[in-house]
Image (cartoon, rainbow, N blue to C red; front, side):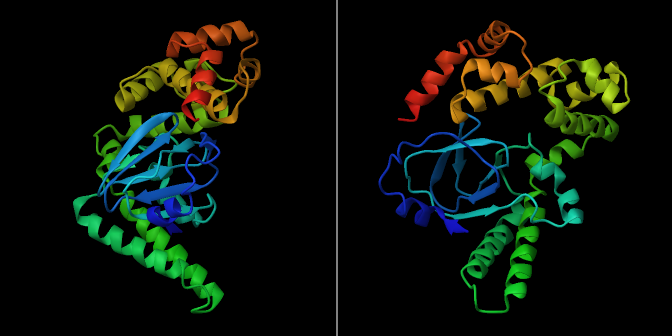
Length: 275
């Protein structure tokens, strides 16, 4: 753990070599208690005002903006730090497609802030108590904080509709998509995998997102392409092969049709903006 003010103080030689989008392998949580933070998540600039939280999940790309007057704690943890039962309860919060900027429930705002301060204090208190107690206390505080964040309106809204079955279907679809988006590209592929009809899957996707199954699949593949071209520095041919395109030209048409840019132009623009 650290704080935004300490983080920026340690990086006063902006622009850090320069800042480039990087693929995240851990969970990042940033609470903005003063000011306003600008932060890129998956090549989209997010604005995080006072009282909101930023959640960057494993697999996302992130890029820092120049230091600002924003203040607040930064929490990061490994994906496997949570116990299995707590991780199950937190699935809507930790889901890959959950919102990056969270607006806590008003009744939780104060306690989230207090828990974050307690967690920061315990992190800095190494040696104050036995190591196993120190780790257990940090984990307990982290779980308490995440469970309150999971109560955010942005997270709970999806679970309050009458048709819970459709949301369960869509949730299973998203999980399957994360595992198979490189090789499975048709709605029928996922319907078969989930044991439902294409019509049922389509209704679930429409109810949850307002978009069709193929649109959701294409958006996930496009997101991966943008991450690899803009953050990891892959060339178009390598990205095309990674995403299952047998012909790089087909990938180029797919990418340009969805972004208005060729893969090379997108990569060049990403490199330019990070200087």
